Length: 230
Image (cartoon, rainbow, N blue to C red; front, side):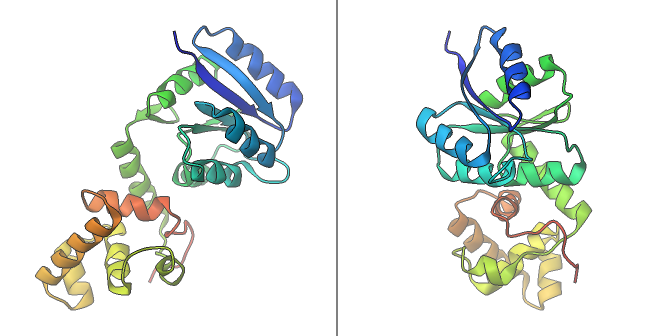
């Protein structure tokens, strides 16, 4: 049986040791390393290439979300589960949008955490008690964005994307949930022009549909959580 290889990242040795002991009782799990801060977590991940990193958010030198983004940028087959004392809806949104596969408070039941590790290893996401696929978590992100509000960071994102200013403008309205007809009315252009732009956006981003394009924007930080609506 191939074991799930894990690194534990927390600045409290007592918590790391306790979590290590819990996981050591599972036959399909192997803790291959530990780290006490965000920078060490990145280096350990580079060296050991674990399947899963269990990481606190409140870490010295570099916080868990920043370290997670660096880890995701390594393009390794490593998924990140954030385990933290801070359990609120907005923090969960930030974590999942930033690349986390799951998020739990530190008082999570050990059995639930092990279940999450197994689900994440297969490519699923775990938010609270819900197990989600890639498509389902994308829909969840869109719902949370539309709940909290926000706007695309058009000027900054323009330097980071292959999209034209008009395409970015249309993508902004797609993320807000507008239909092609509504976008055409909002921008004062034809419905066919909108369709042409949507086709170009999907092609440039390498995605299959509008939902995937919107999630792409969210995942790359083109949409801040808190921003003034127009």
